[in-house]
Amino acid sequence: MGVFDKAKQQAEQLAGQAKEALGKATGNDEMKRAGERDQVAGKAKEAGQDVKDRAAGAVDDAKDRLRDDNK
Image 1 (cartoon, rainbow, N blue to C red):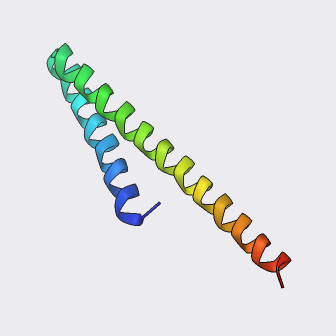
Image 2 (image 1 turned 180 degrees about the vertical axis):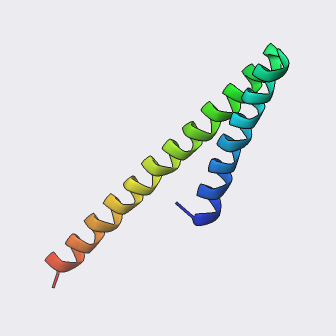
């Protein structure tokens, strides 16, 4: 995962935490729920990127093994 992508997803989660806390403090249930949604979205994006990175790594490993076998 790129550093920029990871920072962006973590920032989304932090913004969600802030929204949720503000919603709780002010009694604004919609803001609280929006904050919770932002946190879930950030975590989901981060998890998806991790899976994508692992898959790309597995493909690269397989290519390397095939190259080594052909020598």
